[in-house]
Amino acid sequence: MKTLIRALALTVALTFALTVLVGARLFGPRVATLGGLLLLLSPQFVLTSATLVSQNSSTLFLVLGLWLTLRLEEQPT
Image (cartoon, rainbow, N blue to C red; front, top):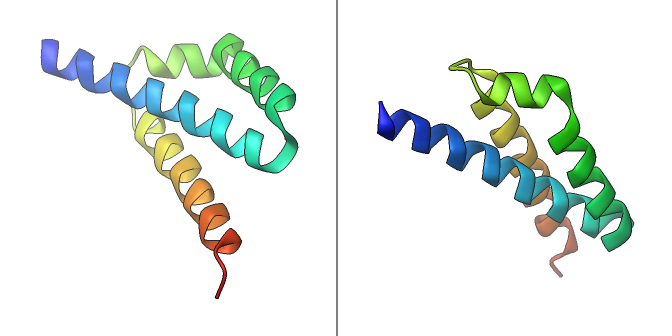
């Protein structure tokens, strides 16, 4: 059970960090900070983060894919 709780916490932390990174790349650090705060204050994010549902990992992989796409786009060819 402790491993499951740690996995949920890691998923939430990575989702938050990647959201801030994507926001910083697209809109700058002020907007990224505001976006991170809004994410943490979102009732939907808080409720799904505390339960064992697939939205946690789906959101993480969605934001990770967006971040990787942005990095790939910025690399010179």
